Length: 377
Image (cartoon, rainbow, N blue to C red):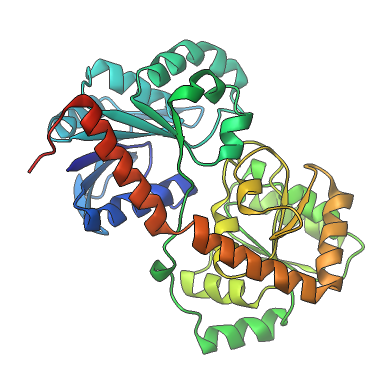
């Protein structure tokens, strides 16, 4: 079976959550007899195609970008050629340009789309895009939501509930390095043996301004791993407030990230907006047996982190509530440890990469059977 994935960005050009999911599915499906290819855009492609993690990754040149949506004139021909040899087309939403390509190329193969997120920020442009969005989603053989929480709370998915399957995002722990003694010793000496940890790209919807507000009048260390467009602004705010317990580490290597996950007391994830549709960093926390603090925003964050079981869930945009949650876990280490253990058990039950890939491969086969198609040999 041959599957073509299509999204605006992909590994190794971009390392976001959607890109990580595509990489996991495309690489993991090979052991199930599925050959995957990925087509994405790049501003300056180093090479038009390359082999990555057991699959072929293709890039079309991005001509321009409007409201986080990349456009490419060459993508139409590239997609059409790759789609001809594919048995199943796997789209990743949202990306309005993808909808245009789908209809322009007159795709008549089995199709599915993983619905990663509602469009939250570009409300005015959404009014213009909505007719195309609904036409595209209605044309899919199957829509996949990444959590039952998102399916229940998304006004868009409500229109297509009868055609939605839920496949939670999963991570392959074997793809992560083991924490090395030297790395653990280095970070323990630098940060201490007990701290809160945030991991993620520093974007508007990550809620770090709330975390900074919650950190005022506290003493416990808070470590922020990642970089992004708001990093300089947030550093200036921390300096202005005189907060000495917040440490910005910027981007770190995977070996350092797993060492920090091993050492931290808990992972804090204050995203207050539905743009945070799942929360890969929460999965990484659960995979490492750490309790979590997140916000109730009706998305997959509260499917990973069950309130009172694997961590604490607080209202969004509520710095005092976030501060109280951190203080509680800080003051109750045995409770925090038990929550972390339950989080890891939940990871192994619901969120492994193998489980996610197996569900997608099963869906590919189901769609082929529905169409009466025969997989490529």
